[in-house]
Image (tube, rainbow over all chains, first blue to last red; front, side, top):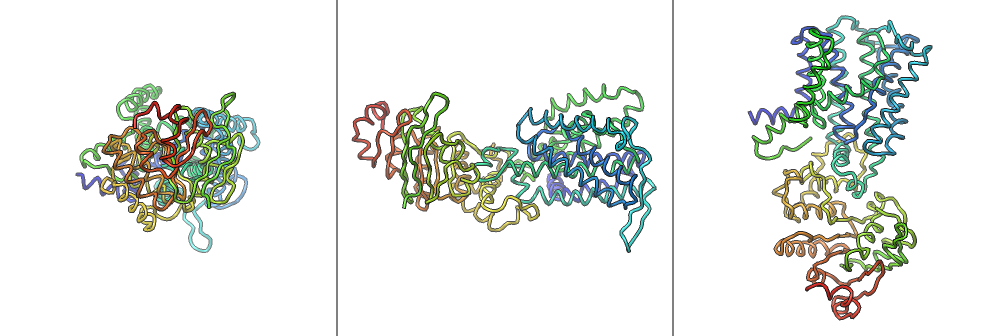
Length: 324
Length: 247
């Protein structure tokens, strides 16, 4: 059991990839699985900033929304390929995070959180007013999902749910590999150092302001990719994607799964969406059920579901695991 | 050549002058202690030198270069490290990672693509430091779980990790038992072989044992300087400081 846990920890990326390849066959329908891994990717991006760097953003709806809108607008207005559409989404989110991050990082703690939220809300209202571009209140409809084309090589239709799922899965796998690389790099260790003790990190000669900014941008880029995929998934971008509730949902999922752990975001997103799907079958007021679950989580395992599992395994091992 | 020189260094907080026209002269490989009663301005002086605070007036030269007003992280890169009085480590990282983070700070922080765990030179240096401070067998423990004495040593290890030319040590033995204090004195003597040290310390035995020279601060001003014998014999110092402290 202990060795098994160690093995899973050592091969966390491989494990996630395998588990994610299986869930469309386990869950009642593929759409739920697709939704789970898109939100998993979104929280993964969020976790860079919150879980690893220790910066509590309350405005990640902004980058999710920017990615979603940019991809939607580009695919409707131009005749570009699937990958170009996704690229546009990621690029716009990156730019958004670069600008917004620059301002928000002037402040710390609660002021930082409020600034991120204020910027996200500004984008929300901008999107609701700028109807010619965003479709305003009713949202952006009938967004095409072009085939996956690599010029001169292949053209694959990804219209069927299962095929689309595996397309998203491939994007997530690439993201996971990149992210794992980054978090295990010296740079990734500095992020954790900043989370643990920013003053000392600065005293050691790290330009913590610039490093936090880079973390912010990276986080925005992955969130933007999730937004782009979400647009392709439902052929639609709604205003609510930019609303502060979305930011809250991202934070809830991360806390539920385990901030600062590699598995956490996917577990949090998966559990959250599964409960939502299950409970909203019985009642419209599923948030009433979520509330107590969330309170119990925060009271009894503030380190999140995966954080709790890891701590239990650590206790069994008697020595602390090397944290990654 | 002097490693550190300050000239008329002054820091005011509103109406309060914490450090007033202080001149420090520190030679290469010298251990100099700064002593004085609480509130004499010792900690403020450290913060001015390591860049945590900007001086109101005066200049600081380090290794022949004017570093006055430079950003803290840039001063650190010039070769000044601090070990803090209140343990200032990375609690949820392992002992090893604490030191490695300090060691790797001398390289570019924007290395996003190689694996930290397989950096042989970084790991080798971290290992060397951990052995020196006696924490190699506790390398996988989270820093938060170390005993207080061990954390004090890790604090010094993290400062050493940046490979400093000048080490500012703020009460390295505070809160330690006599045995642990002896151990720390031995450690300071060992590391001081290759670098300059400014030591702030209240235990007079430690100060007298280790220091080449001593500067005495009182209400932000230098009231005496000299080697341990001279300071011990100095009437003013006896009156304002040593008189109240047992040796």
